[in-house]
Amino acid sequence: MRLEAHHLTKSYRRGQTHFNAVANASFSLDDGAFVSLIGRSGSGKTTLLNMAIGLLSPDSGEILVDGNNLFSLEERQRSDFRNEKIGYIPQGRSLLGNLTALNNTRLPFHLKRRSGDSLQKARELFSQLGISHLENSYPMELSGGELRRVALARALINSPELILADEPTSDLDIDTAREIWELFSRLNAQGVAFLVATHDVELSHRGNAIWKMHSGRLIQEAG
Ligand SMILES: Nc1ncnc2c1ncn2[C@@H]1O[C@H](COP(=O)(O)OP(=O)(O)OP(=O)(O)O)[C@@H](O)[C@H]1O
Ligand SMILES: [Mg+2]
Image (tube, rainbow, N blue to C red; front, side, top):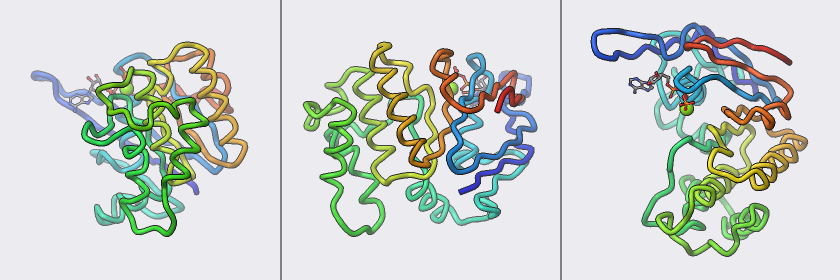
């Protein structure tokens, strides 16, 4: 899959002033890419990620998935595209409070009609992420780092081609953070592409490119 963004701009208003959260950002991501997106808090990383997968519509610019304009699709087709191809690990808490950790993870599998069962896959992911003992816990019973790993399992359940992760290691101790990046590296070696917003400088150097956001502008530094 090739994901291209052309001249994305998104502006917001704060008080009387308008400002560009993202200004004229263009990029392309191909199969197997591993890009770290760095930049200060408020520089526009989350806004860019949300536009890249069609969750947030840009004021101008376009997003092409294998040459097709994402925002010319119906809402339903856009969510099918995300469900099938994208694993998204959002920045904040994103699990449903009334489902167990395991069922949160299985949910995206069952949003579309699919053959097979998600239970075995979900359990494999829990085992890889070291959270098998948390299968039946509810989100309110989990720590920040545990919630993070459940969200990661949920992002992986449909075997996505592209993973967008927004500060995936921010709640984690250094050893767990390293395990997550090892897992990302393994998946990347199998061809899964990554676009990862992170403040974690050490870990961002594991990617094959670093892009930097600065006041809404996207600067491609390396790779
Ligand atoms: N819905 C919104 N309405 C108004 N302003 C917004 C909205 N969403 C984001 N912003 C502003 O846009 C700017 C970019 O926000 P964004 O969340 O993309 O930053 P970020 O780089 O992800 O920051 P962080 O590293 O803290 O997560 C910030 O100044 C933020 O306050
Ligand atoms: Mg953010």
